[in-house]
Amino acid sequence: TLTVGVIAVQGDVTEHEMAIRRAARRHDVDPDVREIRTSGVVPDCDMVLMPGGESTTISRLLRKQGIDGEITSHVEAGNPLFATCAGLIVASRDPKDERVRSLNLLDVSVDRNAFGRQRDSFETQLRIDGLETPFPSVFIRAPLIDAAGSDVEVLAEYDGNPVAVREGPVVGTSFHPELTSDTRLHDLALFDTDRLY
Ligand code: GLN
Image 1 (cartoon, helix red, strand yellow):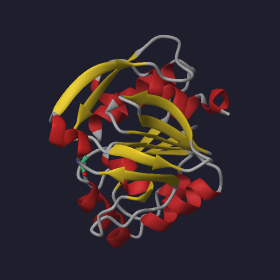
Image 2 (spheres, rainbow, N blue to C red):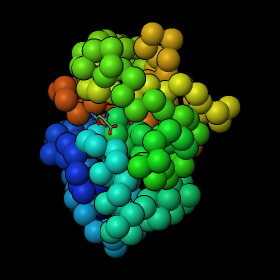
Image 3 (cartoon, rainbow, N blue to C red):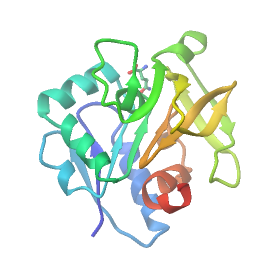
């Protein structure tokens, strides 16, 4: 069976688990979905999702539990990681906040609460590479990606800035794909990665 891990030290975990199960059904898979709060679980996972929440808290707990290095090894071995919102901040090369110990898995720099200063939360329909029709995208105190390296593929933009990116097996979004019933992005980032390369 396929094992999918959801980082569950803090943040919105349950919605992602439901989205993962629904996305997997399209492929007739019934994955073993595990919540990751301690070290030793990531090495058993075929794919990992790092959800939104509070990036300073998530990064502190990942380090404390010794999960940070396991995620890095997971990605270095070419396994999928889907990082959303605060998860994207933690995965970024430069979160521009010394309280966030970045995992440096996506060559982007982010401005943690840039969208939040404009509007706390909003929903918009985004065109996303790999999806045929627009995707309903919920932004909640979302990070703005203000620079992306040359190996980073921009999958979607909002107001001229990247809001969905991919580098190798890592997909990151500024917004929360788990908060609508549309599971196409979970599918693309975790189960259907062949379509991304
Ligand atoms: N602004 C939050 C942070 O910096 C992220 C917001 C979210 O995940 N919804 O961690």
